[in-house]
Image (cartoon, rainbow, N blue to C red):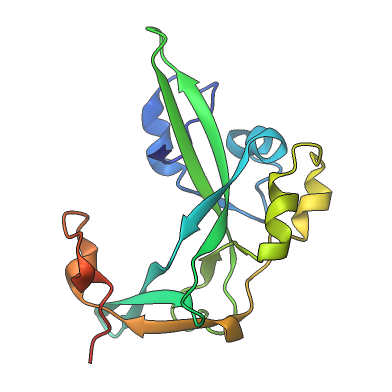
Length: 169
């Protein structure tokens, strides 16, 4: 899927570049996301993610992981956009919420990480009431997570090797 949700009603797929995240507080209200919240929820699997911590004028890339080392799932939304030539572009976005205590010193927002016992509820097609899903969109407990600084190599998508997740000494 392409990163950045392109709503099925969009006139131009470029809108997706501005739709990489949906705010938990407004996802049920925003036209770009509310239909996907009701009908097209997904899990976006990860083993970590990055945030940049500001320190003076510098930005330090930080990697956030589960202390257990296990992969986890972000709460995601998806859509399929079709152009005038009937070419279909599947796309997705993740939902963000306020940061937990661990991440707040780094960034004020964080992705919604679904506890394993709520993943099935998130994917359940018969649950289409945004109110029933709102409780799922909460900050993940910081005590289960870890954070460490990584190389600035992570700032470029062309760098795709183990050095981008290596802990800096």
